[in-house]
Image 1 (cartoon, rainbow, N blue to C red):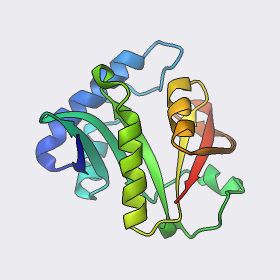
Image 2 (image 1 turned 120 degrees about the horizontal axis):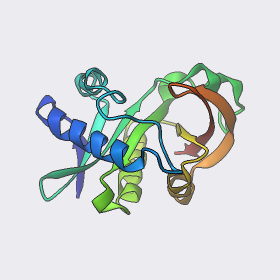
Image 3 (image 1 turned 180 degrees about the vertical axis):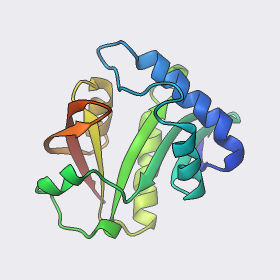
Image 4 (image 1 turned 45 degrees about the vertical axis):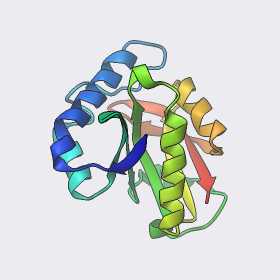
Length: 169
């Protein structure tokens, strides 16, 4: 398995991956509120690729995972007391991590790679938000050393409560 930055030629495969994951989770108790071709949209994925913020996990030439790493966060992040004070450009925000359902268990590898990227970029921490109902993701993040910093109501298309997590680098 390897992680690399996505390129525009990956667009269709990344869209398909997000669609598969969205379909798999929709209507379950772990619904992540993503909808095929709506969120994340093609426009958003293209933007992430062009900004060099979208990373893909490949196995046997198949894209089996994806994540976005950047410095963009919801304003509610400012309401928390984090473990460490850091300027915006010293913290990576992890968005839209997903793993193809047939490759469950590979999420830990992808997160470990995010940590390595953060180290390489001399970041102080990685932060993220996750729906409180997404127990599998919460378990994964906590297993990888992320600590819950608090809860905030966020707009995921509708108001929802999300846990905000941080992992120091």
